Image (spheres, helix red, strand yellow):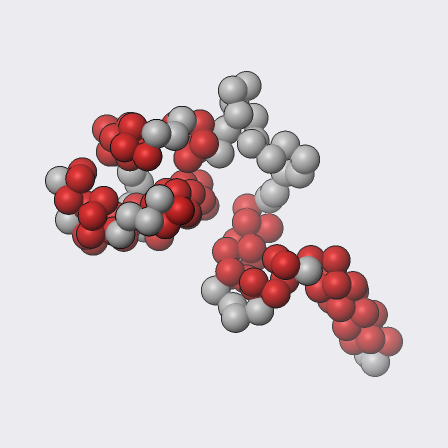
Length: 124
């Protein structure tokens, strides 16, 4: 599945959790199965336009927000552009226990990685 489907699913999950709605509740609202909501959120199934519109209407969010677009059709966070490899790296990092620490203190983690990388190179 594409990284876009995964990112869209993560945005839906984030909005759903922020509104304190369970997957089961959302499935009932949309007249879908729990597994369909789960597939949408983990990016293993592309979301239909109809379901996307219904989700946006229910949570009162713009489609642009879930698609990660601003009004001009550019990246919502246009400060940086990520390659597919960078997106995959971030998605894999999110699965680790350290991810929350990295997010809360990115500068220190970047310095740690830089230091460990230079230590590794000097030992070769």
